Length: 241
Image (cartoon, rainbow, N blue to C red; front, side):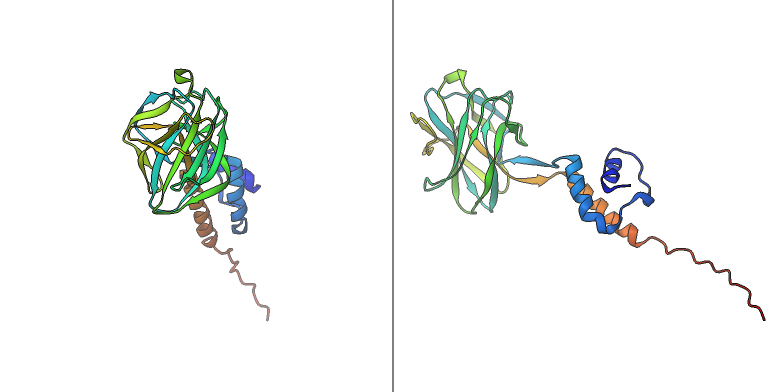
């Protein structure tokens, strides 16, 4: 049985006899094929989440997001936009990430519609960055997305959110925005209640499937090492004198 066949039989619920188990030498290949066969076992982890939020709308062109503090190094792998109702974006957005001094660290274009995937929170649509960005601990950063200012005809921002949490040892400080600004602009104004639109995703966290696969690999290694030695035929031939 091939390694790929072994993986597919294992995860499809079919029995796999020990005689089908691949050699220990093939464990690295097994892991690689499992990833390719089962798809991506990791989810794009949302940096921000909350229990509930109201919808707010921009009445003029603006960039809207929030300020956050990093307490341990974080790897940003994509930028995102809030999709109220998770039913698709009504307009195109450009998302930016800045340091506290206003230097743009990364930007990305998130198209309207449902073409961009939802992150782990189910509230933001993201696009991956070509080169991930590492954020330093102890620093404040800002993230924001452009809004056309179409009022209720455009996309909503989250306001008056409850139970706001951030992943990766980060903390939400307050909302940030800049109004009357066409195109992506540093959101230097503050608002406590939110008006957030832009956000980001961080280094994905392996789901249970990865841990299970690793455990199976260890089990395979132990069993292969504990296989009994071949039986020895102890019937001695009679000596002739």
